[in-house]
Picture 1 (cartoon, rainbow over the protein chains, first blue to last red):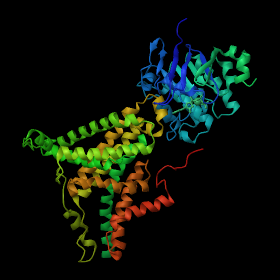
Picture 2: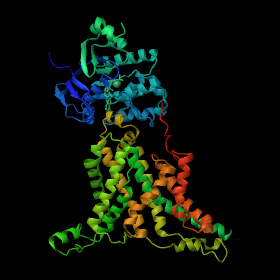
Picture 3: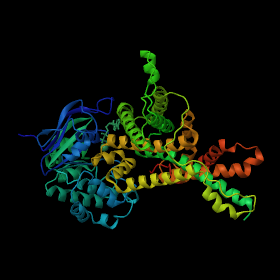
Picture 4: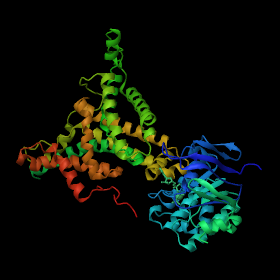
Length: 237
Length: 331
Ligand SMILES: Nc1ncnc2c1ncn2[C@@H]1O[C@H](COP(=O)(O)OP(=O)(O)OP(=O)(O)O)[C@@H](O)[C@H]1O
Ligand SMILES: [Mg+2]
């Protein structure tokens, strides 16, 4: 079988000169699919995402995008290759307005961005109403929408989301998941970390369970949901 | 109008002009601090180094001539040409950009994610290093800097305002250099604000100031932005160095203006460009007025400590400064 569209393969590494956090960890996503990473706090989910985005050096392993080895590229070079990333924390520009955030999202683009912004406003109507408000004044759920919208502004081919539903109510979470599915239907691959494992795996084509920087289970979302061991340890029975 | 009142106004105007220089130096601090969280202790020395380099280039001095003479037993000092001020300023600016690149490439890049105190100490090292290099390159004697800015009091203003008071009042004495400095500083500030607000690079700079990680994730190169802000700070240092040098000669005490910028920052807030300007003006005017009113009564020389007293009061009652963001972490 050929490689997935985006894959961080057997990555080992950590922060700076510190100890390894990831140990032969593999995560990836097929074109137009949704892949979900779950696992306990501190498992290294965010670290794995940052490694795929190039924010920390991997000591061994490789990151491949569409068959090309991008392990040595800087994050800004990866953005130009079509990767969008929404970090778990500090993912918006708080002193800028919502609209300026979206414009910043299109930083690397030189063509007309009006159309893409219109699409983002259609996806997240609340952002249109708040477009002249400082992003730092928004609620948690609205901030996440700004962050995801901002990432879409680059017109990425693959979108990496680190806990996009952190700190939002169950209703808003369902909303956000619906939006994410909508985005995936347009052909954008989605690689996302989720705390709400059960709901996330339900919409996932592929799931990864990480424990202590290692792959504990890897399967389709449905298979993981049905796996008694995964249910017992990670889905609360 | 009473003469006393007119004198007070004159003092105030002159204070404003001194304040402009404080503001310029403080501005250099704010630029770097906002974008990288580094408190650049070397900002004052950068102004000194820029001024030294400018004089050296204009007078056709051979850089490192002492060193060269000591090693090879030669006796060279000057190339024997003079470089026009404009060209020399451009060359100096190029050197400041190179300096910005070198600082980032050899020092700051390796200290990413370090504690602020470590970054601060690195800039202390940088300050002494740069002072040493400046000394070695251009020699340590006091130099005069004349880039053709007007000097001396303005007779026009004196004549125009002489009629305001009694026969004992001879009109406002205002230094032409101060006026030019004010205009240039104002242009510089407006230019920086326009740059930050409306250009792509300026916006990227603001984005980095807002959040490093978010900036990375939209494809901004942090290294590029850091070289950019250090270059801008170098440019601001050059302008401040020219003003100060034209006023009091280029000498190593110039690097001490950085110490005056500290209270300005405490007043204005470390992250606010308008704060640096307003803080500079308040301290410039404040210390002159204080000297004029209270200083005479208590023996003078209040200008040495007034700024720090004011800053201390601010530290106690409004630690984030006039314009700074609240130093309370959002929870
Ligand atoms: N910037 C950092 N520098 C050094 N160590 C870090 C850094 N960020 C995280 N770590 C360490 O890496 C390990 C994994 O953290 P990581 O953030 O990847 O976990 P996570 O699975 O995303 O957890 P959570 O569910 O809480 O978001 C932890 O032990 C953490 O202390
Ligand atoms: Mg995490």
